[in-house]
Each structure stands twice: as C-alpha cells, then as structure tokens.
Image (cartoon, rainbow, N blue to C red; front, side):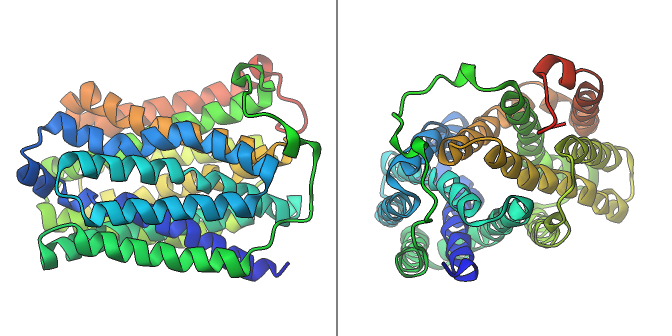
Length: 386
C-alpha cells in the first residue's frame, strides 16, 4: 500500500468531518433568531455531534475490527454526505438537530481512521502518524467556522454551507475508494462481537483514557469560555474574537504538524510534560495582564494538548490488538469530555470569569501530581506504559 497516498486520504476524511462540526458555530445567534430557539436548545444543538459520537465511535471502531477499515470508512462517509444535504435543506430546528446527530454518528469514523493508521504504521512511528489526525483537526477547526460564517452571510441560510460540506465529503469519499486499500494485517479480533465490558479493560488503558478525558474536559472548557474571557479581560468584540480563534487554529495546526512528530518516550514522560504545559499555559494566560503576552503563552496549552492527542492514541494502539475498538473508546471519551467540559464551566467556574483559567490550571497541576505520585500504584502501570 502507498502509505503516503493513504495518509492523504485519511487526512481529508477527518478534516471534512471537523469542517462540518464547525460550520454552525459562528451562526448560532442567527439560528436562535431564525427558529426562536432558547439558549438551552442551542446548547443541545451544539453538543449533539459530540453526544452522537460518544455512542458511535466504539461501535464503528469495533465493526471495523470485524469487517475491515475501508468498508466502515466508506459507509460512514456516505452518512456524512447525507447529513450535509439535510443541513442544506434545513428549514426547522428539528432538521438541524437531525443533521448534527447523523453527522455525529458517522463522525465515529475518526476512530476507524486512527485504527487504519495504526495498521499501516510501524509502532515506533505511530505518534507521528497520529499527528496527521491532529493536523486534520486543526484544519477542520480553522476552515469550518470560516466557511460557515461566509456562506451564511452570502446566502442568509444553510444551503450553501451544506452543499459545500457535502461536496468536500464527496471528494474525500472518492479518495477513500481509490487511495485506500484494506490493510493486510488480520487478527482474531476481526471476529469478536460488538458487546464488550468497558469496566474490564486493563488498568493501563483506563489510566490513559482517564488522562485523555480530563485533559479534553480542560481544553473544551477553555475553548467554550475563551471568547467571554477575552471580552471581559481585554474588551474584545466578536470580530476580534473570530480573528483570535483563527490564529489559535493556525497555531494548533503548525504545532501538531511539526513538534509532535517527535515521539516522547516513555509515555509517562509525555503525559507529565503535557499536563505541565497545559497547566502553565492556563495559569499564565490568566495572570498576565498584557494582551500580546497573555495570548502568546497559550502556545504552552496548545503544545500540551497536541502531545496527548498524538501519544495517547499511539500508545493505546500499541498495547491492544483491538485497535478499532480501542480507538473508538478513545474518541468516545473525548466526545464525552467535550460535552462535560463546557457544562462544568458554564454551571460553576463561569461565575468566576476573572479566575476561570487559574482554576483550570489547578486541576491540570493536580492531575500532574496524581500522575507522578499515585498513578503507577493505583493503575498498576507496567513497563509498557511507565
């Protein structure tokens, strides 16, 4: 198999998924005005994708263990195209919600994409391969909101955004058909059933999923509250915040595509470095008063999250034969974190906006101390993870 061509196809599969995720973010106020929707239902709409992905990722991942990666990538991409077409024709809140749910259920193919990369990549290069997913995430988060905002301004509805999303996904479907071949490696896990007991997972796996979950809660809490934080601290308006998110997306793209290609071993070292960077980035952003410096130190946060997003899935794929199922659990835990993180922020810490990232940094440093002093004993981490 031509690994370079296959990696390009995987990149576009994931990027078009995340472009769809970001399409409606910049036009939530217009959605509210168009359908007389309350803030609660806007929250439901925004979390629908992650909610659906929470359930679908392990299922699609394990189906790919049983029936193969390529068939599931093709099937899920067809579902994504359908969700975009529904979005293009949406004339009610219900259709918008159905579109988001379908996109989320098919968005579980990110787990299949990770498993596919694990199949075709040598163990020592897996963290670099997972960086492809990270770069695709950055691309989607940069261009998704930009496309959504521009299309809505141009057409005053969701038709153009939906059709563009469908066209991009159709392109990635063709890339999947012609550039991806089913990996040769087969194992006994291709014949297992869908029902599995998550609570009987090995302790090292639970530890890695826990760290991933907590870090994603922190990052999603940061992401969902950042525009309010900058408005309160620097008096930024909507236009300035939009530009700021674009800059953050570009930084994430560059960081994920460069520094994190370097494997940090052992995994515990990578985890501790990542948690330290996340805590430091949040702390400095909160306490530094100057606009430029306060925002520049966010690179520590971006770097820390990038380390975890590449090294944890690479490690999970290395210590499990059920790569599709394991990548599904990883994506599922991330999806749950993207739901819980904003809920925690907006229900508790959000009332203390001036110290919001100080509080989040305390959680990050607490996880760091936990990783250093207690994780090995509690989770019985062996030489594979230590």
